Image (cartoon, rainbow, N blue to C red):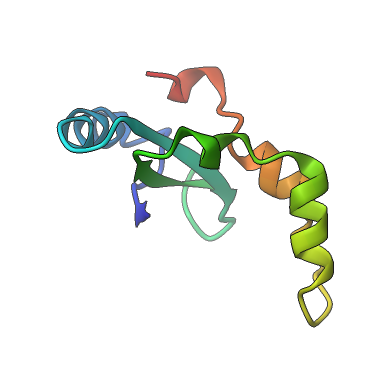
Length: 93
C-alpha cells in the first residue's frame, strides 16, 4: 500500500503507478479516503497483490473482523471499508 496523491490534481500519478505495478502484480488498484486537509478532499492509496480474493472479501467477513477490534470508531466500519474500493468515474483507469 502507498499514498498516491490527490486524484483530482494528480491523475498521472495514478496511471504511472498502475503501469509500473502491473509489471509485477496481477491485481493492482486504488482506494480513496476522505482527507479534508488536502485540496480536493480525497487521498488515493494504491495497493497491489497476486491474490484476487483479497479484493472480494464480503461484508459479513469484514463485520466479523471489525467486531474483534477494540475501541470506538467514529468513522470506520465494515461498510466504509467496502465502499472505499468503489472508485469515482474520474479515477477509473
